Amino acid sequence: MGKLEGKVIIITGGAGGIGLGMAKAMAKEGAVLAIVDVNEEAGKASEKILQEISPESMFVQADLLDRENLPNIIQTVIDRYGKLNVLVNNAHASKQKLLEDTTQEDLDLSFGTGFYPTFYLMKAALPYLKETQGNIINFASGAGINGDETQGAYAAAKEAIRGITRVAANEWGRFGINVNLISPIANSEGVQAWKKAQPEYYEAVVQKIPMGRFGDVEKDIGRVAVFLASEDSSYISGQTIMVDGGATKLR
Image 1 (cartoon, one colour):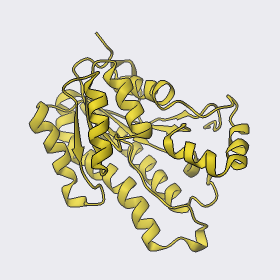
Image 2 (cartoon, rainbow, N blue to C red):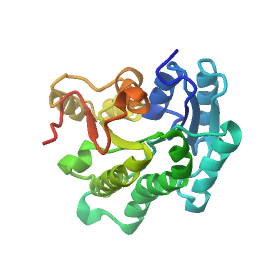
Image 3 (cartoon, rainbow, N blue to C red):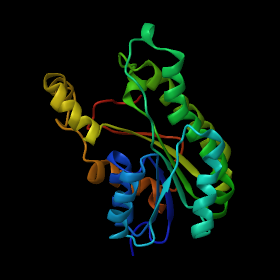
Image 4 (cartoon, one colour):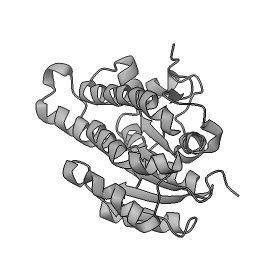
């Protein structure tokens, strides 16, 4: 029996990168995954990968910017499986710009793919998570915690997610629901492309990580997600877990 045997888990942005890494780690622990992504081609390919491990897993195509459709994501999963144990809000898109160059459009993209889907999916999932005394895993970033340059829109949305996560932990603990955050540094496809484009900048960032490397999306980030989705973390809530090789130490 795996740590997540029989649990139904939604992961947004699950067709690649950290999302797929977490999905694979969770599937190997017995979970059934519903990965949500706007990219239909990547989503179907990832669905096949997951079904080799967890045959009942599925892909749900959705544009998180379509706010009115967000509750339908939860309903699709409930209609298929009859329950929901874990919601993982991983998806987020943004543009890197200096604050003085950041536009309303940039803010709308970051909040529209990150903060608002996190908020509305949490609300839509709440009745079902009450039934299972389930878990929510949201995503923070060192960019917000440390105030990284050119990350204004992204940092603002990530810190807003941290804020509602702490509120939810206080309000929903009475229902047996725990709500936590992962703040990762991961060797995703995007980071690999960035490494090729800006190798000197990449190496400079790596030098600031005490463990000297970016985390593996499945073995490093995914295993922490497994822990937060499992009974092992049942008395942890409202916390930001830095999965970043020691780059940021919260006080």
